[in-house]
Length: 529
Image (tube, rainbow, N blue to C red; front, side):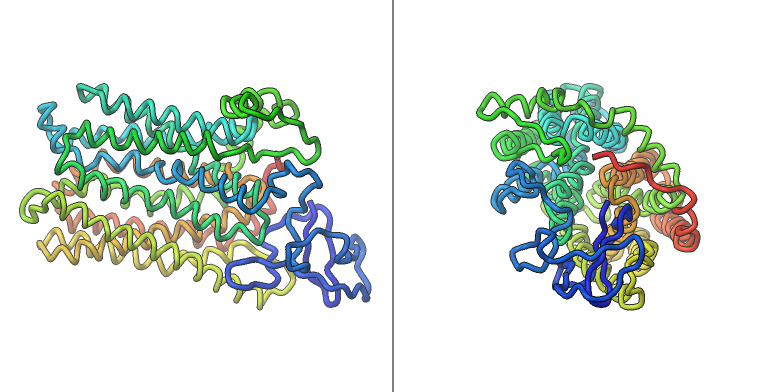
């Protein structure tokens, strides 16, 4: 591994150094590593001067391309701007549908309960299996995409999601519907975890920030966009027809992958020639090509071992399962039960008004995306001014971005509970919900930035554990959220949840304090591909 970092008069290269976040000069959102053509000045042992002509640069002639691309036109780093962004756009429908497919049905509990002679809270349990299976689905996808490539994993995930959605549409009873929903959750998860690897495969370091932002926004806004749409549809259609619309969305995702996606996993040490034409593309989609090229890649068991090795390290275990899980579980709990709170008396929201209420979490989500991007960059710039030597970079500084949105989330959850307890205006409900979503996603952004700095060569593996933490919390909360509210009232239940979020910050503080020591004591696994 080669890391470019600054010296007084030249840029020097240190061998076998991890690349945590080598930002030297920033303009807007891009990371730029700049070289000087003046190679005067001594170098320390183990270092060597690099002239501008020795490295490939961007169109400006001075921004060094990291990683350095090969001379092969089939290298995804060498693809044209149009092809890269076409492939990237083909990924986004699957990302958007990852959580959309689960929350899409929460507006349908009442008509389903009437048809199946059940209570709406009992029907709400139909999404629990889907939420839970997102974790295993994401973990398995990482192993498969590291071994057989990104394209077949993405293709089959969308095909199976489409088939499962058709099954849910045609279900005649609760059991069959719940089984189909569980398969949906398992199959729809991969784009959330392999998307980061696809971005890393195609884009250079200075291009990735904006792409990651777009990719994250797609799957973070999905949980609210789904019920926003289905709530409008259920006013005019029965619930089976509403699910048929979701089938059309997944059919569109499959078609986009078939027509526009391409394999981004590329072995620069041993490039292979792939068959072209329709036959070659079909083999890529089905995974036949990936199977033939799998020799020399890490085995599924090796990737799984690395996954377990990563999650056992305290500097990922605490920020994910000790903090992120408790931040996201209440957000998921509200999404899955909000219809039971706002549709009955005293609010008596119509389906249209209920749909419009989802603007609150969507606005909070978009605001959190903007906040996380700019505020975390602001923190990084300030940190680098105080730490000019990139070798002294400590990723734990990223976790400072957790605190402002964490405080806002606590306030939002308390306001949300008080609004329902005292029948305050729907405006209070909307503001509390939006504040909670802002805080949840703002903290997730900061934690994700930290984890990706710590595991630059295991982006998908680390992302899978972030997803698993969200899934574990979301799966558990569905079973006790409604009963908790009935027992203690909205103010008591949501106030206690806010207290749990407040205590969870101890995991972040511990990681900030002991993280550097833990990273030396428990280093990351060796890079895979």
